[in-house]
Image (cartoon, rainbow, N blue to C red; front, side, top):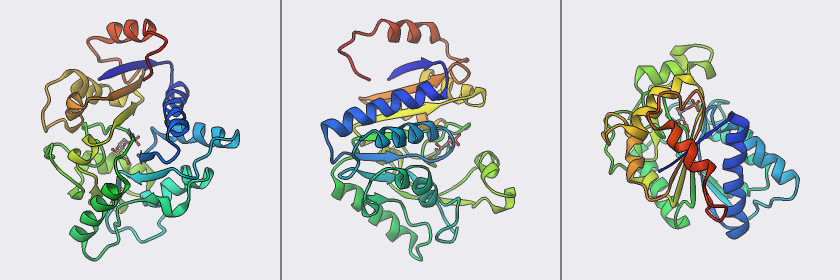
Length: 259
Ligand code: F6R
């Protein structure tokens, strides 16, 4: 796991966008794993700017990490809409190449299975963007999630519902259920880049980067990923024991070594 501590969310967005641009130039039909929430927004802003300067997404495809269950189609806070508004509408990804779990499906297990099959049909997720919850979740794999899990329905912990209430007019509107890629699904991506900003993430970051690998902290499974990059601002990195070591390592990284 490579831990990179940067000055702020703009620098984090820029470095993640560098990795995505390098991937798309090398492999124009790359498959991106897309996270929602607030943290990745600077990445999407940066990619929209790069598209304005000619970066071509026409052969790229994207798979959302997760979706609320029970929000009506087109609800502005459904993750399908958020991904569309914040990212895919701002670049030239073909709409048919943008996928998300169907949170409106009458048959949820069938929708989950169909989503896994769609990812498998695309080959492999080349680069998966992730945020992390204050409880250590990735996707919506809450504490206790199986490390082998695939896309399925999950219940949100109250802490996550409270954290996400800022996107809704009241806590009561935040759905209790979600469909999320499993930890096993996420671990199958070639490269994962997890972004975390703000002091409210410091404990979760300390737990998953430096704590034991345990289902109580789902993001800790990334310690087993062969290519995981963690981009942090100073506040999110503030509880790390080895912060100075990560800074030193990144500052002295050989020029030929990419993220
Ligand atoms: C979003 C997702 C979640 C968020 C996490 C952090 O698709 O899967 O795991 O990444 O809840 O959200 P923010 O970035 O809003 O703090």
